[in-house]
Amino acid sequence: MSKTAVVVLNWNGKDSIKDCLDSLLAQTFKAQIILIDNGSVDGSLEIIQRNYPNVDLIINQKNLGFAGGVNQGIKRAIELKLDYVALFNDDAVADQHWLAHLVGCLYKDSGVGIATCKFITTNKKRLDSTGDIYTSWGLPFPRGRDEEVSTKYDNLTEVFGASGGASIYRIKMLDEIGLFDNDFFAYYEDIDISFRAQLADWRVRYVPEALAYHQIGASSGKIKGFTTYQTMKNLPWIVVKDVPFSLWPTIVPRLTLAYYGFMFSAVLRGQGLYAMKGWAVSVVLLPKKLLERHKIQSNRKVTLNYIKSIISYDLPPNAKDLRAIRNKWWKLTGKSS
Picture 1 (cartoon, helix red, strand yellow):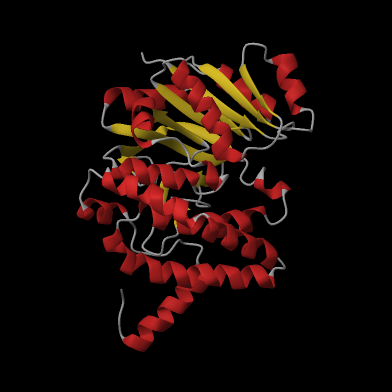
Picture 2: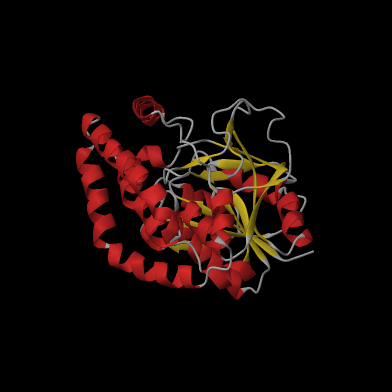
């Protein structure tokens, strides 16, 4: 079977890192574990050094974010000439067959570049993700998020994208499309790489037998304004880099409405400065993203109709305010699309 590494990114994960690593060491499919410590100061690094001497450890003096951190692990996997590299959150626990199912998916179908799992909350009652969806509003969301665990998502199927918290990537694909975008730091970097994979004709597949359990928001909740800043910074870049220009008239006006709605909401929550900072950084780096866009779109191998077929023409389930605005617009104009 193919050679695989699992990259774990640790940032102040003292309360969860042992359960995480123990679950990976108990996998029925054995793999090299590469752990990136992103400048932890809570004693978690010492726990890892003391209890897990066989883990390939990379220590950063500062937090490089999710993208910057996992890229270090992916580069190590490439140096080791491995076939696949899986990513796993430090606040998650894997079922013992999690990796075997994901590796098996890539092994059986050479056209699949990314495989993702059924990601469940730690209390095993609700879903975190069964793959990611990208919408005509430019708003991604995790498929099934907050729904009760049931048989609804028990079918092997292709999805738009994969959660970076518990998925596997074919290194041959990464050699072609590139690694995660360091500028994203955290949030939506997995949407970006999934979009780039799809454009390059690599499929993303959801494997329901592969199970993992996640404590949602355990890392991002530690920093005030973090989610607001990253959202405002990163959301526009997905359109700028990845969305074919023919779809801009559909997506850009909707995303603009949603984006400034998020800005207004952030101000009301007392996080206006974080939102403005995110917007400013997004604009400053716009020329760089346009240059990246040229390379990505030039290498596109799929048709526009294919991209249209993998996008959802609806709002995320939790976008209640936007849904209300859209419904009023439909009523006013007599349109329903």
